[in-house]
Amino acid sequence: QVQLVESGGGLVQPGGSLRLSCAASGFTFSRYTMSWHRQAPGKERELVAAIASTGGSTNYADSMKGRFTISRDNAKNTVYLQMNSLKPEDTAVYYCNAHWVTRGYESDYWGQGTQVTVSS
Image 1 (spheres, rainbow, N blue to C red):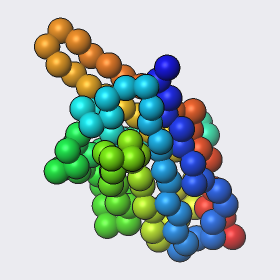
Image 2 (cartoon, rainbow, N blue to C red; image 1 turned 30 degrees about the vertical axis):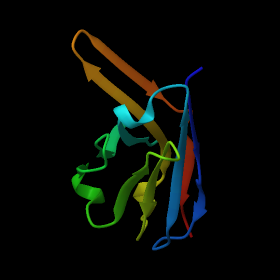
Image 3 (cartoon, rainbow, N blue to C red; image 1 turned 60 degrees about the vertical axis):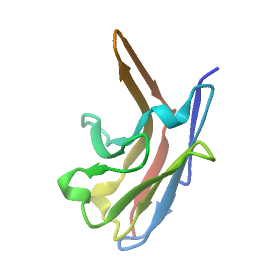
Image 4 (cartoon, rainbow, N blue to C red; image 1 turned 180 degrees about the vertical axis):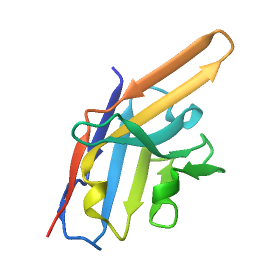
């Protein structure tokens, strides 16, 4: 059974930090590109950051560059999102995604999300 379980969300003041974790099970984690996405109320889900299967490359949405860092530990089947200098506009539900494409096959999994609220 595939599971992606996010944790680490919560309420934080502007300028604060949070570290999200996503623990994966039920599939070969080290094959998958992992990413974080977020969805604010009334808005579409958007990509926050992604990391390649080996961790060798990352990419970020422009508004997150320099503030957020994605990382992974393939030995622990876990991907992380370190979020610094948080702003009220970062308030959203954050989702973990696992994605793998190979010849003739595509696999895509989502977690249930964790709420991040940035407010004073």
